Amino acid sequence: MDEDMLKRLALLKALQDANDHDNPKTQDSENIYVSSIRDANILLKMHMDENSAAYRKRLVSYVTDPANQVRSECDVYHNFIMDLFRCGDFLLAIHICDFALSFAPYNRDMLADAINACAESSQFEKGEEYLGRALEIPKELWSFRLFLYSVSFLKNKLSAYPMDAQLYQRALELSKEYQKFYPFDEHGYNQEAELLLMMNKRSEAILILKKYIKSLSPDPKDSESRLVTAQCCVTLLHTLDDSSNYQDIIDVAEIGLRNTTQEQPSALICFFVYRKALAMDAKCHADSFRDQEYLAKTLKTYQSAYDLDQNRQFSSTIEQRYAVLRPYVKNFKPLVKRHLYILEKENAEEATSFDQLP
Image 1 (cartoon, rainbow, N blue to C red):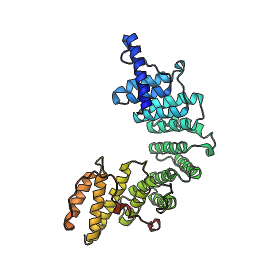
Image 2 (image 1 turned 30 degrees about the vertical axis):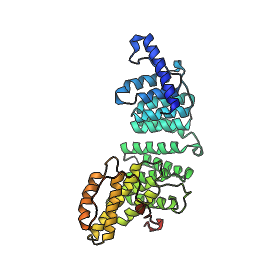
Image 3 (image 1 turned 90 degrees about the horizontal axis):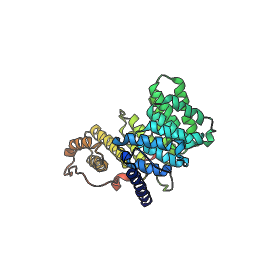
């Protein structure tokens, strides 16, 4: 928390303590006193553990009671809703959305949050109501979040009703409209591919992912380029799990590495390095371990993935594969966990041309 939030928190606590002193029967925080959603959000951040579910319910009940006159701008409600999402309180999030939409019925961010909450909680009937209201807004006025969560909602619903061809068509058409109005946002393209995979159209999904990765990815020589296709690369790599075209996998992993921004989690970088190492490993086996230089590069790539794997998601597999390969390389050092959270320069510079994508 920043300094201003800490001061507000201290003031809120003082007011609550004073109220508890005057009302001894309410010392378990049955009564809640806040004058704004910002203050309510500070209290929420203090009660995000699994043992505070009852408190969060009381807090939401308080701020949505018109008699308490707790109102704010919709972007402040959005922050409050996101914290409820982090607690898994999707039904409480819907309650907040309903309250905010009662005085801002066509607010795009609130509709997006409501649709997202319905997707996460499988409230499909209520989600269709929100989506119906959103569809009354011209598409050129939709935010990227409204597109993103609307398609995600239809995808989740399609998971529950996999044979609904009409539902699939609605989702596919909306993903294409997403691409039309936000042509430089990879999520619209990625959602189209995921929909195709859901309908067992694997070959078609692979083709369009390669097409979008090639057309949307930034020029590695252009430092000002801001387009990224990291998520499309993740989806494509998962789709290529059983592929024996190992160079294809390496190429996609390297493009994913180039397109991963600083704002994205380090786990994503680790995933790309790990998948690259596995494909390099497979090439070593296919070559009967004859290329000493390539074997050494593969071990270094495994080492980089090992260093990046802060959550030890892949560490066990890396240890096993490293142990298999290391005897084939003379005088190569053992695998040791290093506190290194960036790629070795030699790996980062092994960029592959988009033209090499088949």
